[in-house]
Amino acid sequence: MKGKIIFLGIIFLFMNSIFAQKGSEQKFNQQQKEKLKAYRQEQKNENQEFRKSLEGKTAEEKGKAIKSYKENQYRENKAFREEMHQENLLFLKDKLAANTNLTEEQKNELVNFFESQYQENVSFRDKQHAKNIDFFGRIANDPNLTQEEKKAALKGYLDEQKAEVNKHYQQQKLENKAEKEKIGSTVKTAE
Image 1 (cartoon, helix red, strand yellow):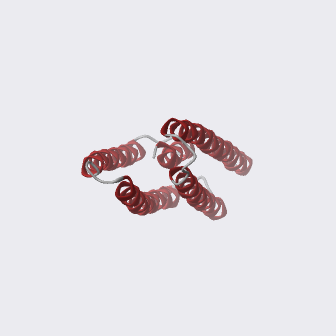
Image 2 (cartoon, rainbow, N blue to C red; image 1 turned 60 degrees about the vertical axis):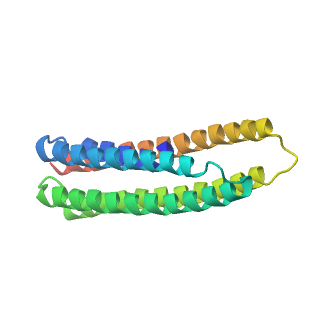
């Protein structure tokens, strides 16, 4: 889940790097962070309750329950991220509307860039999710693996996935920096 939520942090950093003003950005970002923190805590509590509900079930029942639970959680996370994105996008548009240093073309370019990065993140998470489902299904249903081998395979896979997630978001940070420099240079040129 950490990797899936990282993009929100990048959005906050991107928005803060574009706007040097204090006040409303800090308040908005703080509200978004608190909302995210509350959502994570709610999921943590739900996960604990879910694990308790698995006690006494057969391996097959557990497998089906976990798959169903994870699919439902993925859909909930996707809806939550979309809601946060819409709020961030609205805030960005409001701030850009009040900005007199940027042209309409630059403002539109920023909004399009922001939306493009969000869509890249959605696509990336969807692909990661599909890979996860495939991997977990193969490992869980492989009768030739011992429990220790399954744990080792899972750890290796999760380490690999973490590296992929970090690489993806590092690339987005570079894109954010390049976009910021591009907009900044055109603002300086116009002055």
